[in-house]
Length: 256
Image (cartoon, rainbow, N blue to C red; front, side, top):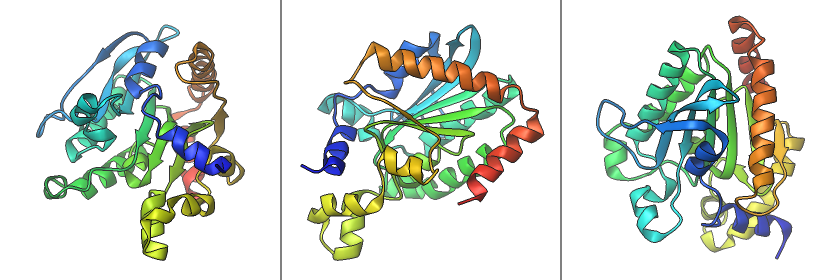
């Protein structure tokens, strides 16, 4: 097994710590909030408010399940439009109350079903990107498993983008890449080798800002490392004026 195929397997492992678990482990008094106030509550997107070292923060994440029943509830971590609209509602609420935003991302991509398209999937993702670019509070995004396509990017237009060591982040799935390039989805491993989707490769390309080392799932060391780094980085970002914060975010993505 090549290193890339190993990372791909680990990124998709059902045993990985989920967004909701990170929120509950890193924050004190985390309270989950629900619904987009338009259509419904999407189980694939979680979000709420808690305290990080005494500071109120908003956390939003894409949630996968750990068994079949939970995955059916979470739609296998593939958000519908109402999930992205829930995320945006919570981001605008965070801006109103001057709370930093932390996102945890683990998705193969947005749900491509007919109903999702009928309810404006593309528009919902685009609206998130548009609004996040101008949010007046610090945003840190962390890829904790898969970061697939626009479905991941809709929560990753941030001041800082981090990845766990064995996570992946790409424009589409290796299976999709192989199907387009070679008309053969079974060549996904070969596609993954070409796509530069691992944390090390993306750090070298400056697509991400930080790699968080992994030592197994649900490691207290990983949880503490993420918590400490979030506290440190949010303190730095909070020192910037609103205009400086937005300009740096603009320049971060403009360079691509």
